[in-house]
Image (tube, rainbow, N blue to C red; front, top):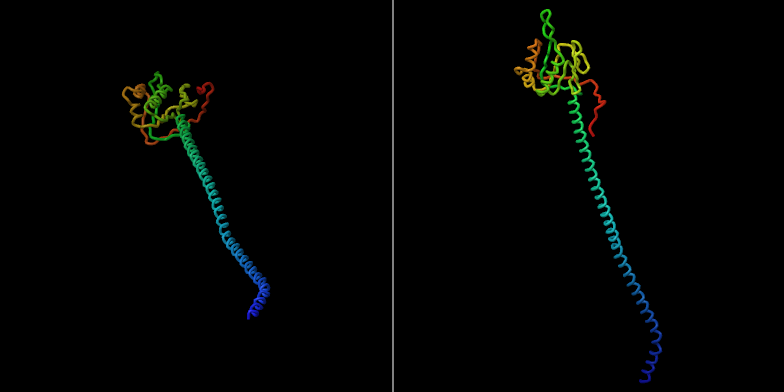
Length: 250
């Protein structure tokens, strides 16, 4: 019996070396497959994790660039708006300056009598005295009489004056040649019609004041007629304005 057991044990010992390599190979194969599977799983997980991560980084970078570009555009828009405001202010100032200059030039033209004007006023008509008795000197209207009436009108607030269609300005001169009056180098003949723009009542009262110029002219025998008008016109000065000696003070 003991001999049989020993023989069986010997046979088992002789058979073990054959199964051990096979088991080792199987275990190695299983280990290799397990390692390969683990690595493959890790790589898949890593790839799946990296794809959205890279996309997020790219989107964040793109968003940052878009924000920077937007800030740059907003800065350009703000600068353009300021520039536009400067242009608009300059244009408004230019328009105001041009309007002011235009108004000032128009006022100067009016003061110089270079434009026709209209408004209420009075008309003063002066005529020579009627025929005098034989041997008496004729009484005619002289340029001094016209100058006196015109000065009275200016003093009463007249804004524009004309004599027989000749505008009276600061450059107008009155003189006499024979029986005619010269105004603006133009010969004028009686009757003399003086048109003055201003307040009709004030102008008439200034001329008809007791003991005034008109009363004196009538006392000489001259005919002086004064009428008010709600609307009159005076023509512009058509002569030349020339300065040969005078010049502005610098």
